[in-house]
Amino acid sequence: MLSKSIETALNKQIRIEAESSQVYLAMAVWAEVKGLEGISNFMYDQSDEEREHMLKLIKFVNERGGHAHISELNAPEVTYSSFQEMFELLLKHEIFVSESINELVHISLQEKDYATHNFLQWYVAEQIEEEAVARTILDKVNMIGDDKGGLYLFDRDIQQLTVNS
Ligand code: OFO
Image 1: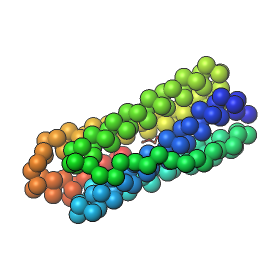
Image 2 (image 1 turned 60 degrees about the vertical axis):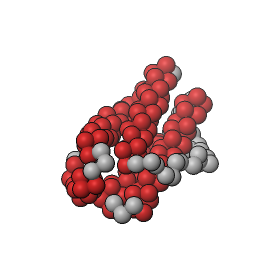
Image 3 (image 1 turned 30 degrees about the vertical axis):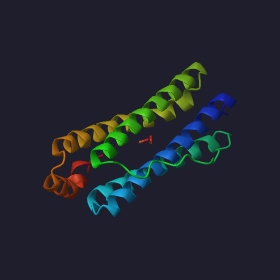
C-alpha cells in the first residue's frame, strides 16, 4: 500500500510525464511544418515514449492501492527560434525530469518504501539514456549551426543516430 506522500509524489510525476509527451508532440508538429520529417518522426516517437512512462506510473500507483490522478496539463511552447533552440529545450527538459525522478527516489528511501524505490530504478536508467541521446543530438546540431545542407543530412540520419535508444 502506498503512503499518501508517495502517492502524491508519484502523481506529480505522472503529470510531468504527460507534460513531457506534450512538449515533444509540439516539437514534432513544429518540425513537420518546417518540412523536416526525420526530426519530426523522432519527436513523435519521443512523445509516445513519454506517454508510456506515464502509463507505467499510472499502473503502478493503481496496483499498489493508490489512485492515479489525471490532471490538467500546462501547455508547452509550440514555436522555437531555431532547431538548435528546440534541441536545447529537449536536453533541458530531460535534465528537469531526471531531477524530478531523483527527488522521487529520495522520498521513497526516506519513507522506506523499497517497492517504489525498486520500481523507480527503471526510470533512473531511462533518464541516463535519454539525457545521453539529447546531448549527442545537441552536439551535432551545434556543429551544423546554420548550415541548411547539414540540417538536411541530419534530418535524414537522426533515426540511425538514436536507433539504440
Ligand atoms: Fe524523458 O522523461 Fe520520461 O521518464
